[in-house]
Image 1 (cartoon, rainbow, N blue to C red):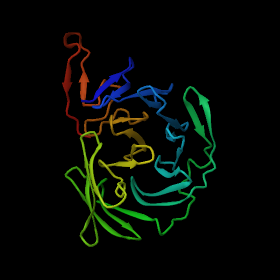
Image 2 (cartoon, one colour):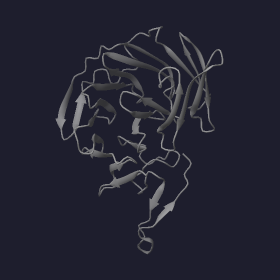
Image 3 (cartoon, helix red, strand yellow):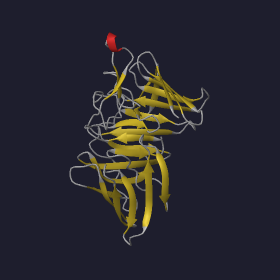
Image 4 (tube, rainbow, N blue to C red):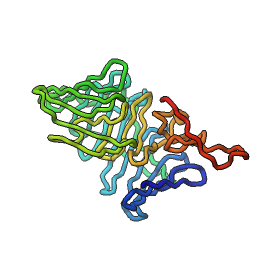
Length: 283
């Protein structure tokens, strides 16, 4: 059983998993997660943000940094990690192309105190990546019209068909010879329960509709309307944004109205104090 704890402001403060491992969440003055640690030890993940609230950097427990840049619409266009830049080209709110190249990121980060930090922003509002596509690593994604449901993956090595479930979640991928090359099963929180694959587990990085998994950080990026990040184990967002009052499949934690991450809402009426009701929300 997974247990959740909240601070006086209603923010998630700790999660204890079925194995007894507890992850603690620490917030900055803007109510954004600035650090997580496990069981109070030095297994820290640190998070930094641009002035507009977009996530700029993640510092992993091994000290390696993952740096993000975005276009003026809030869509990620570059992810820098370990000397490699992962570039993205968008078709509306879905990824059309992505590829890898050598990283030339020159932004410098600095600590601003109180958990705030910033990165040189000369490239943060670029309309397109400064890297030319590398044909050998170029991936083209095909989505069903008007949805976040991936239908196909096209690479220099071959073409792949993606099978989704009734929600639009990718569950299987087949090559052009009809052989299954990837399969994924998620639990209700988005955690991967089981992989069946012949190659990289991130051969299809899409999880629930609109989610993209970053294996470097362990975070899911949601790309509907504006880029935001969340942890699958808690299904709670790492940062707050102007979509705070929105609900996706009834599972988002909304502080404004006292919702929990399980879609429950606390009633503050004196006659119904401390009672919880279940409200079904279509997102």
